[in-house]
Length: 333
Image (cartoon, rainbow, N blue to C red; front, side, top):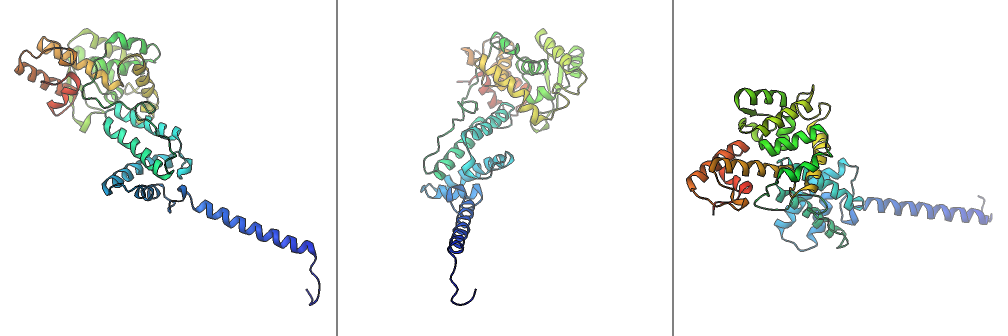
């Protein structure tokens, strides 16, 4: 442009619009970088910790919530969520149901699973400055309530649930109730081999899916157990175990096994398949002592016989400590 030449109005306007556009893009980039509700970090866990620090909570509380929230962050990332603004109740409920599956499979304690959800609620509440609506671990996520004694579930309460299940799902339910197997043990059981063992030696060996890899023997004391093993062997077909051969443990636990757990929970007082082991335990207690289990209103008549029965049941359930049996049949007081 030569000196003294006037600048056309349209060029001035275009320059102004271009400048505004650049500034607007810069603002948008700034907003994008300032994610996680602006808590000073692009990492969800770090941002959550900073948000918690603003609540004047104790160091131990902040540390505990942050550590637990880190597990949720990993879950969220696996589900395509990397920022707090995209976390919603549906995602937390999905996370909670996965935890409920682990509790039912005896891979996690109900109290810890509930704490994990509580930490998500605490962090999200702090991050949103109180706008977050808490997700209930029990009502929304189906995590069992904390209870010291499980309820015995009668077969008549469970039978209706089996009508909606396929053969493999029903087999796992029966094995949990009639032989006291954990859902993982029942799923990974070679039922054909176990059925043969039951007929030959009146006992089966449980090795796959056990806690700590401890092999144990479960006695066969009634015809119902034989029938359950026979049905499981038929459901197994040509597979290596009761669980479908084309699935791994995780997909089965969060798919078919979850459906079985929810069906049983809806039709009975059971909070999951794990509670069915209480039915087995109460039955064994009555058989070994001649009296109803304390959880069913029974009175301890002989403390030595009671202790021996508890020791036997603990071994059959795959527990190393006799004290754990109280959560299945009731305490000794």
